[in-house]
Image (cartoon, rainbow, N blue to C red):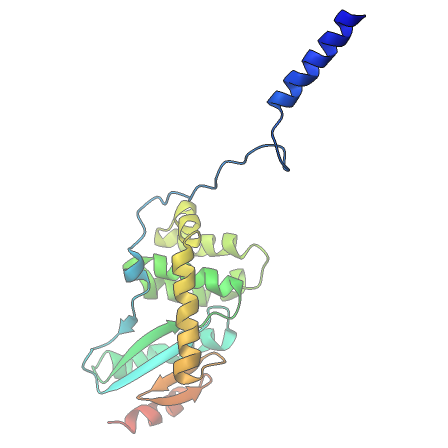
Amino acid sequence: MRMRVRRVVHTLALLVALAPSGCGGGSTPPPTTPTPTTPLPALSAMLSEKVLGSPTAPVSMIGYSSLTCSHCADFHLVTFPALKTSYIDTGRMKFVFRDFPLNEPAIAASMVARCSGDRFFTTLDALFSTQASWAFISDYTGGIKSVVAPLGMTSNDVDACLASTDLRNGILSMKQGGTEEHGVNATPTFVINGVKVVGALSYAEFASIIQSFQ
């Protein structure tokens, strides 16, 4: 009887020694950052100003947009190409795109566009033109991956991009800067040579404002 009790006590002692301490039932390995298929650009490059046009153009147009904003998509796909032909390509205006994401899918899309490097504006075009396929679904990350895959960004590239806390914070800081500097609280909002314009105006309305500075 005593031998049996001793064995039970010895077994319990071993179990206690082997059992993990604290709540949760053992340690969890630290999360790993996904490895991109190709290296992401440097953070400074991703957060740099995204500009089209001559730096010496007499007119500067800053556009604050959210990639999930339908009015932003309308401007970018319908009005902007005509403005680019008339004013940017001719050296009369430069355009600066700044992120003002309105929700989580918009933050993710902004991050992916900035991770695309020198394909930024091409990626922007693709995300705006396919907005309905990814911006309003629960698996927006999967939708974004489908959009950018033909542009050469793999699933691993997107995952690594979205894991960058510094990039995310930089985009949110850009949004905050728009609010503090120009009072931006809706998208799209434009600042044309210091004049704030809210909403996706027509080409003729934008042209009138631009020409007033020339």
